[in-house]
Length: 203
Image (tube, rainbow, N blue to C red; front, side, top):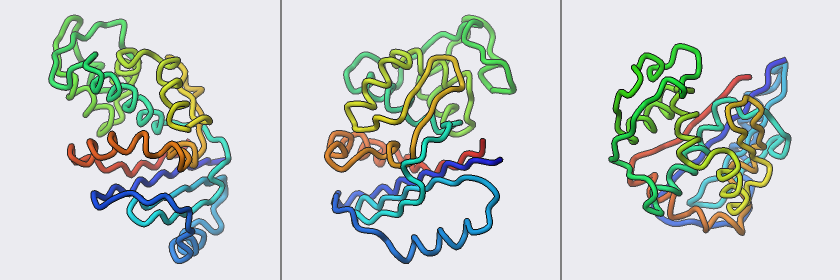
C-alpha cells in the first residue's frame, strides 16, 4: 500500500499570523483530489501570511522518506547560525561517508574537497543520500537534531542515524503555534536564500 507524505510550507515576507483557521476552499479541493486513492495520505498546509491551514490526517505517523532531509537542514542551519559551521567552508569527503546508490557524492574520491553549501544543495535538489548522511553527522547526528526538533515543537518528528526508520506527522513537521516564532528567523533566512520547499514523497 502506498503511503504519501505531502508538506507545503508557504513562505511569505509580509509577516506571520498564527490563528488556526481552516482554508475551506483549499481543503475541499485537496479532499477531492485524493478521493479514491488506494493508500494513506497525510497533508498539512499552513499559509504563514494568513494563518490559514488545511489538515488531512495531519497527526498520523508516517515514515519520513526524503522529507527527513528538512530536519537535517534545520540541524545544519543551527550550527551555521552558532558559528560552528561555515556556509562557504570547504569540507573533505571520506569513503566511509558513502551510502550505496547512484548519488552524485558517491562518485567522489576519498579526500576530495567540496563546499558545505554544495553538499546542502545536493541534499535538497537531488535528494543525495550520501549528502544527507554527511550533513546529519555534521549537524551533531540524530540525537542533536531531535533535541532541536523538540525545542521547535516537532515532537513527533524523529531522525535516526544511518537508518531508514525516521518518522513524522505532517503537523509535527511544521510545529505548533506556540513554537513557530522560534523558527521564524530561520524561515526568513531561507526566504533570503530563495528556498521554497515543496516536498512530496512516496514510500
